Image 1 (tube, rainbow, N blue to C red):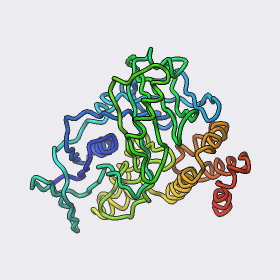
Image 2: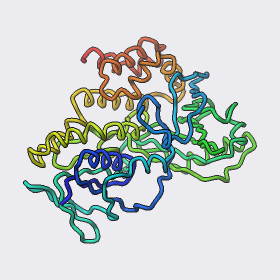
Image 3: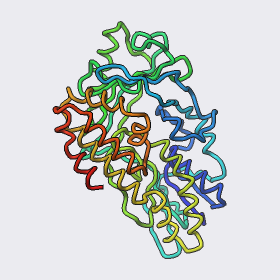
Image 4: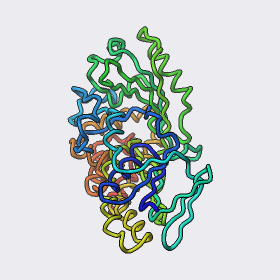
Length: 375
């Protein structure tokens, strides 16, 4: 019998499996395709995950820019993850089982995890880190990108080692994301920040190809397709512990989750170990509390409100909004994008944006002031 069984072999699942194993818990990770490489490109702010080893970093761009209607130099260090390096770092101390979970039965003494091939695994704690399947009734972030040689990307950016976090100029309800990958190539991605349902990928692909043709480029490199569910509510407490994207750790207004998931793996594992002697129900409850203290639930609600505000704003005002956001002090930008339990910083960032906004933007933010006063 395993102490912990975790479904899902992505960064979130492997981070928690590693953390549990390092604390002496017999841990099993269920991965439908253990040998499959991670194909997504992961970017994160260095201050979100300061313990990330250098072997897990593919590139640290020399500068990070953002454009609303004009340019902004961001005073935060941005990193591109080396997927193989991150995976090696997170892959130690636990058993990996190839398979897909078909169901879970919870009992007083533990849980029984059923796999599609008929096998059953007994465990004290079951964690679902299997991600979220896109559905049409949710807000989604979608993107279509291609990987170009760095010399070709110079037609879109001034320097090949510069990241462009967002470029809202010359776009239709979306932005361009430009990211050096550290191997002489650059990811150029047409992105729809948030929409319900998500903007179809073929629309984004057509926009990107038109953008490239306008500067004399064609897209023959590796393609990347992105669909991220943004607006999951905080999970209910129960014997199954959702983690990673399955546990609503995706930032509702940015789509980022990897850094939060990796960072939270350690305190969640600590909480499980401390409650372990009190039984499976206590261990699951401790994990839920570590993931979702009241402050995190409050911030998540504020972020979901921010998502709805952005989606309700006329497209021509969105670049204006981001001009304002990127002129906020760095600590307030950090609070809104990365301060998962920072209620005061998040509300202050929202309040500052309201105060700075012209009337045509402010009327769409009117609910932010009410939320600020109610906290």
